[in-house]
Picture 1 (cartoon, helix red, strand yellow):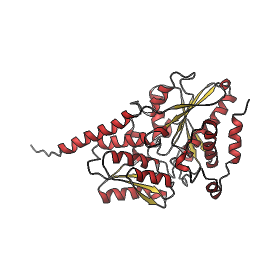
Picture 2 (cartoon, rainbow, N blue to C red):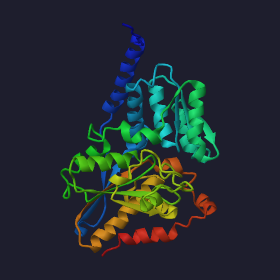
Picture 3 (cartoon, helix red, strand yellow):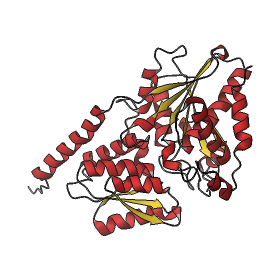
Picture 4 (spheres, rainbow, N blue to C red):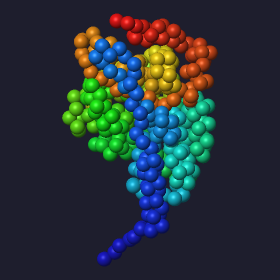
Length: 357
C-alpha cells in the first residue's frame, strides 16, 4: 500500500482564520438600504433602488469580491503568501484589494488605462497595485501572465462570478431583495432590473427567482457597445467594441453570463445612462454612478409600459456605486463634449416622466 500526504496544518489553520476574517467582515455590515424612488402613488407602480454603494468598498462588487475570496480559500487556491491577481474595470479590483489587505496578501489589479483616476486611487489606498493595459481585451491574458510569473492566483471574476455565490440563498442579493420587499404594497416585484459586467448578479437573481418559484421577471440593461445585448438577441455570441459605462458591458460574452435566466434585455444609449445618473441625483439627492443610470433608464421604460397597460406592481433595481468615482468623466460637461455625448434631450425626457399626469 502506498500513500502520499500533502496536509499542511499551518496552511489549514491560516485558511480557517482567513475565512473567519472574511465572514466577520460580512457580519459587521448590516444589509444595504432599499430606497423608495418618488413616483406618484396613484400610478400604482413603485420603484425601489437597492443601494449597494454603502458596502465598505462602495459598490456592488464588494459582494462578489467576498464570494470570490471565500471560493478561492475553500478551494485551496489562496494561501498565506499568495499574490492575488484580478482583471477588472475598476470596482471589483477596489473590493478585492480591500479583502487582500484584510488577509495580508499582495494584490495586483489589471485594469484598462481608461479606468477613472478615482478608482485607481482607491485601489492603491487599499494597498493594491494597478497594472494598466491600453487594450481592454488583453486584460485576461495579462492577468494569467502575471499569475504565472508571481506564482499567484488569478481570481478571474468573469469565469467564477456565477458559481462563487450561492444562488439558492445565504443572504445573497436576490434573497435580500425579496426579504426587504416583504412589507411593501407589491411585495413580489413585477421586474428586477440589473446590468451586467461579469453576469454574476443577473445569474444569481435569475436562478433565485426560479428556485423560489417567483413570477418576477428579470431585465438586464446593457450599455451600447457591449456584446451581451446583441448576443442575447441573436442567440449566439457576438463581439462588441466595449463600453464607456464603467463596470458594465463587455467586448465579449463572459463565461458567467447566463442568458437563459433573463426575460428581457434593454440596450441603453450612453448619453441616456449619464442623463439618468444626473436625474436620479436631482430627484432623490442620491449621488450615483453611470451604471446605476443604465439600470434606472431601463426601469423607467418598463414603468412606462406597465402604466400604458394598466398594470400595477413594483420594480426593483440597483445603485451599483457612487457618483464620486466619476467626477472627472460622467460628472464633467467638458468630458461629455469630448466624447460627443449630448445628454440634454434625455434629461428633458426623464424630467417629463414625472410631470403630472
